[in-house]
Image (cartoon, rainbow, N blue to C red; front, side):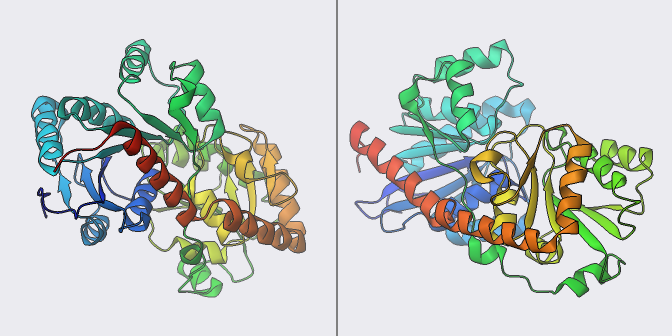
Length: 388
């Protein structure tokens, strides 16, 4: 992997280091990859550093696009050494902007960036982080002084950072996630091929969900909702795409609701556009959210959407206008909304078209990257940049 050198960046371009725990399938990881690929290269020389080894195909993709790419090989037992390596990397790269993503990278990056005297330190707040204890909150209040900007992907995250963590309002900005509209619509296989892969009939009805298998996504509620549809739609199928620590709990829910013939856990997939093209309904039953990239991808693909009214979801979905919203933690309400769309395909198509227009107008990936780049430049102009 290439290492940064003082002469990597022509004069005039800001040297930007994106910091992430690891690369792989996930909303925050996709967001970072979009920044890496979409920031204006005439203005920015963009490098990437990951704390841990991730998915090989993602790392190969990143290495092709980054000015430099480094994996630290982080282990908690060697935290001081990893922090030393990160400080050294930042100093050698003479970065003007350090942009941290997700909790571990946020914490390590801001400590290392402060020691290395990076002129501008930015974080993107991908989630609410209500799990933070008093020590975590004390850390946030301390490092609010050296964090120049916290980019929040949903409006409610701004309120949480102000109210709970004491972040000054002038250090918070709302820049939602963006999506590559063309990529979300580029299916390589048709519906029949997807249905055949999973052993389903072409006229079965498919409910698709995509996300990390974590408690906040509440896939157990989706399993229950789909089980409630069994009598009304004998051919209903549910495909849950993703991996994570809640897999055992979801499998237990599948067994509890006798939904083994209805619900399939597909693991991590790289063919989400194909799966979206086959889906009758995209379902999001989260009890907590930022603004999920998977939701934006489904909107871009013109899918009929049922989502819970949490986090940044209502920023993107207006109930009855471009999707249907239901309360979190209410499987019966989710089942009723899914049934409404299955009963009325014309409504689903109309909502899907409206969802796609919303993404094109407000959540395009190039617009997101442009706004982030503008923030880098404004902060750098105000604070100065490294010499050399």
